[in-house]
Image (cartoon, rainbow, N blue to C red; front, side, top):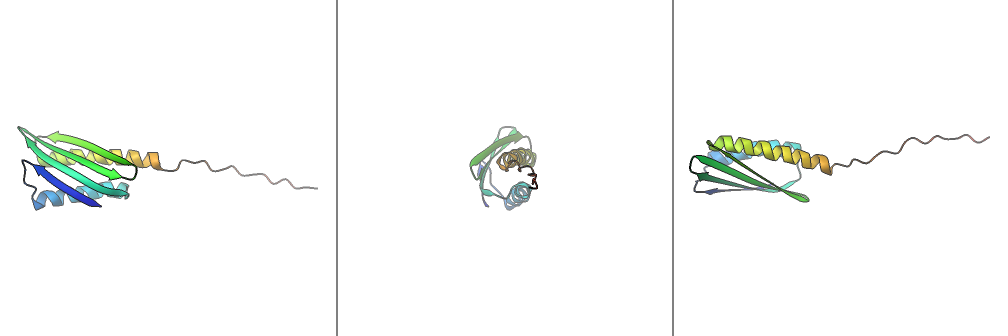
Length: 108
């Protein structure tokens, strides 16, 4: 999985990169068909904003979160992405019916 982390009015430190990558393991634990992930971190007055776009087969999942603390915004963002990825996984699973057992009629 390719992870691209960028910051707007914010320097992305190795600690932030490690924190995001460890949190993303939770998403890949539920659904391992993630192609790439783009994370955008930004600072606004009195708010930290985190946005993420996860590209999976057949769909792009986009989430946003804003909190007063950057790490809290990342935690909230990962929770949202994880819920949407699990929902996408449930929709893509095969829900086909198995045919019933056929009765074999003995011929006389």
